[in-house]
Image 1: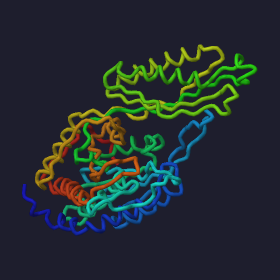
Image 2: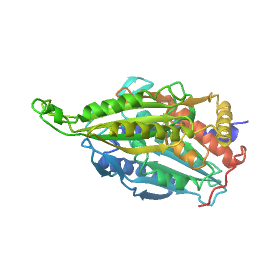
Image 3: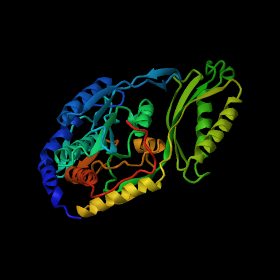
Image 4: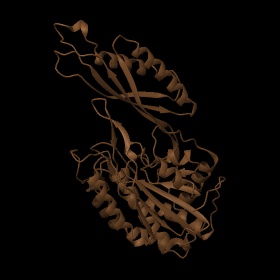
Length: 414
């Protein structure tokens, strides 16, 4: 397919390279850890200003608090930031949802707060790949579309949530409702370090186990105590033994807290764990195993075990509509001499949520980078232009009628 009709906009994206890099750095220097409400508010404001050029309908959306468990095993409401939505061309025959998240895993007190250059192509910084580079790519691709002669032939909505890194529990309802109004979704999570996209994804559940025992003097009356740390340890071992029982299911005890002075039998302990599943039926299997283990631990004399949490993201299979979308993007990449590949991954993201709502989507169209969730997180800055051109060309070709997309599912309208 000839690139001639689109060359002007593709060259314009090339000219935006330095501006894109500057925008990534500007956003990365705003700490927007998932629980930093002030930082998330500042990030939302910065994004509102960045996207102002689109003259879209802008909405800040309050989200419900989620139920969390503190180190003492007590439940409390965890507030989150506001989501940001921008909407344009609602009446267009084809509607696309573009998603990203504004939060990072780096809290306000984390030592990783600055950007540094590793080399002329590699920028190290908090959230540069996951996902602030992706937000800049999204913005630039839409700018190119809106500058083109076909602006208005595709309706688009941007949805940016503040809680993806903690499971999108508060925004999940909003994501599901929004998905119903679109034909397909594009999410700007970072690709794998070699540029490969994520195909099928595992589902995920986050749980907290709270054990209550009985305190006693560790010397005089040790026999009267009921040790919560021992009970939570037995629970952790029993959970870990489930690994390998069913292919595609992994359980990771990831956090434990309990006890105090060593001359006191500890009467409380907390353990948080994550479960990954590759098929929907695995959820029921795990819940049955968990209930069996819970009952066994709770039968110990003087011990009570409570479980909180559950599965927040369903597995994302590579179904027909999603595979068709992948192939459409692959063909677009071939036109640009950009290889597009994908493979299954154990990770999960809001692409799982969109798929569960019936919306086909590709969810790793953001920057090429790596070492995400660590102080070594980096982005390959040349990928900013490459990925923006890929997305812009896809949208322009659809808008100009040179490519065709039809979701087999019928959206509910606007």
